[in-house]
Amino acid sequence: MATLADWLEGARVRTLPAAVSPVVLGTGAAAGLGQASAGRALLAGGVALALQIGVNFANDYSDGVRGTDDVRTGPPRLTGGGKVSPATVKRAALLSLGLGAVLGLALVAVSGTWWLLVAGAVAIVAAWGYTGGSRPYGYMGLGEVGVFVFFGLLATLGTTWTQALQLTWPAWAGAVGIGLIACALLMVNNIRDLPTDAQVGKHTLAVRLGDRPARVVYALMVWLPLALGVACAAVSPWALLVLLLAPWTFRVSRVVLSGAAGRDLIVVLRDTGLLELGYGVLLGVGLAL
Image (cartoon, rainbow, N blue to C red; front, side, top):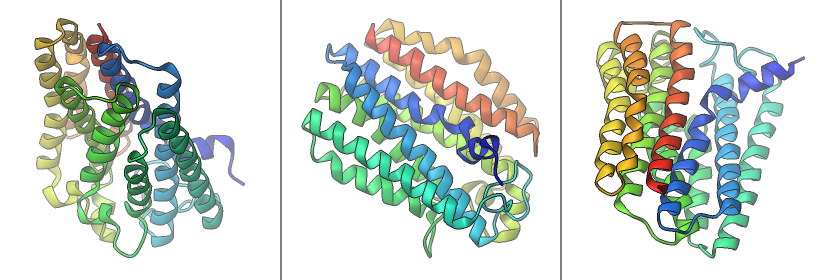
């Protein structure tokens, strides 16, 4: 019988900052245009959280039934660890994704941005197809592409558009930065699982690159967003607030580049999520001011 703690672990709460960060940043960009809406921001946050939890449960289910999670260096999963039946985890995934769809429908209805329904539908299909289906793109090294597009560009710019009905280049720069940190979150997770993923045929980008190159790419993914934030200072000097994250960025990149492995990277996974949250808040505030 799974406990509440097991379900929270299955939802991968360490990754949830990746859901709210683009919404905070996108709302900050809208505020800079004088068009921020608390109600629409809350709806966007609900959509992002529901989809993030849904994709986490979907991954738990799909990896579990494929046998990918039979041997893990991280915490045992609900399906792979035998804590919950696969059907129950699948239902949890579908319910979360369904909730995201309902909240998304409400958001496009109040903002009048009906074309975003297509983008939302594609995002839900992509959430399932990451590890689900006959040809999961996460097993082909394309997971970072999906994360960058949906949890970076779409989440950030979609938030700004549903509030301001326009986009600025700092919003685009911030969206790219958020997307890169979200990719770093996935990269460090896959670096941790390199030994087992390679054995079961899960060819993530980390597996394709190899251990050392993957660590270097992780470092680039967390440092480049700071450079993008500094560039935004051309519009709003307050964007330089992102430089407060430099010591945190140095610490997480140093741990990864030092060759940390296994459970030592679980802390980095959490801290990368917090880095993304800090980036969304500080750059969002900078653009709003």
